[in-house]
Image 1 (tube, rainbow, N blue to C red):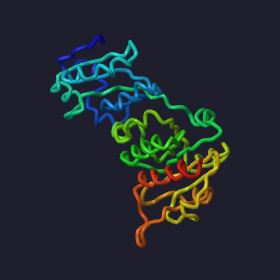
Image 2: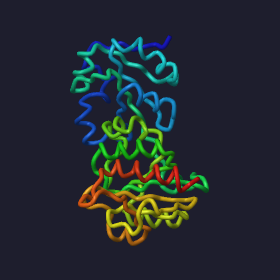
Image 3: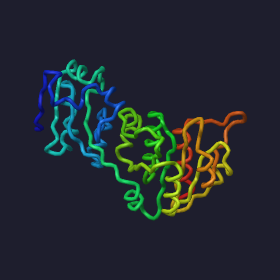
Image 4: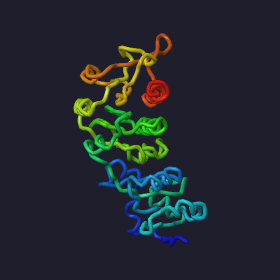
Length: 268
């Protein structure tokens, strides 16, 4: 059976990385991140893209987590504490009862693009500052088989705890890389042979008319400002037709519509 380290003191230094989770999320974790919940942690362990450094588990959840423990590397410590101690350490009531400390392992842009197959679908994100939207975008990327996600300097962190949770772990499994400014992202994708599609209510073509090549990068901007004009000018712009008098969809919802179209119709 897996050896579990039981901790009774919330000030135990071995739990320092789990202390005040929300506050630490806001200021960054210097190369690490917190993953929350069994489903998310199962993806983290199974995929292996980002190494798991440790687990913190509520005592009452130990028996139910045997399957998760079985997949851990032998040198990953598992800490267990009462619900009260765990809540004190974390700084709020952690109802899911399981947290993991992961180590970031993000490829650089050139390495990511070089590893893509000849036929590839990439998502480019510009100015996505809302963690719920970021998580939803990664969830859709995984659901429709996107090969990678690129994010510009204006995007929030896909490995923020809430973004990971909303993505149902997809932020831990879909490869992503930071790509500098929006213009730098678009230039690099064009150099790598990608056809560029930019989503906008003012798009030149209706989504239903869009046909994708073997290498397609679809670009999404933040709700409200959308994609910069300079980016729209470098891509084929497409729109999602909506009821008269309304031209706005949540960006994560839009990505689901577009990715379904690209994978179900354009790339057969």
